[in-house]
Length: 116
Ligand SMILES: Nc1ncnc2c1ncn2[C@@H]1O[C@H](COP(=O)(O)OP(=O)(O)OP(=O)(O)O)[C@@H](O)[C@H]1O
Ligand SMILES: [Mg+2]
Image 1: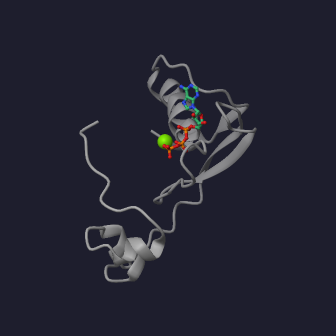
Image 2: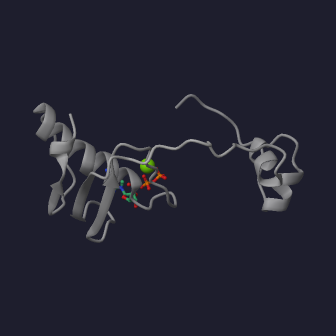
Image 3: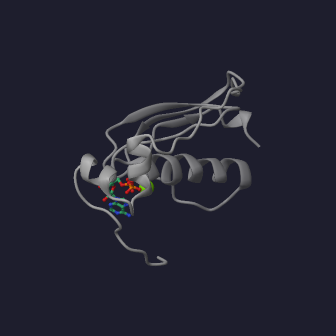
C-alpha cells in the first residue's frame, strides 16, 4: 500500500551474499533475535475453531492456546488470514461485542467465554 522495492532476489546463498538484504543477515547469522529467557506458560485455556471451511480451508480444526503469544504461520495463500481474521476474529467480535459480521464458515468456535 505504501510502495517499496525488492532489494534482493535469488537463492538463499545469493540473499546471504547481498549486502542490501537484512534477511540475508539473519540467514547468515550476522543478525539474530535472541530467544527470551522468560516465557509465558499460558493459562491452559484455549479457543478451538472446528471444521473451518472458508476459501481454501479443508475443514481445519485448530486449538489456540490462551494467555500466551501465539503465531499462525504458513505459505502465502495457505489460509492464515481466512482462519484467524475471517473466521475466528469475526465470530468472536459478533459473540463478544455484538458486532455485525459475516464470518467465514466453520462448525463451531468453542472457548470464547474465556475472552473479554
Ligand atoms: N475474498 C476472497 N475471495 C476469494 N478467495 C479468497 C478471498 N480471500 C482469500 N481468498 C483465497 O483464499 C486462500 C487463502 O487466502 P488467505 O488470505 O487466507 O491466505 P494467507 O495464508 O493469509 O496468505 P498471506 O500469507 O498472503 O497473507 C487463497 O487462495 C486466496 O486467494
Ligand atoms: Mg494473510
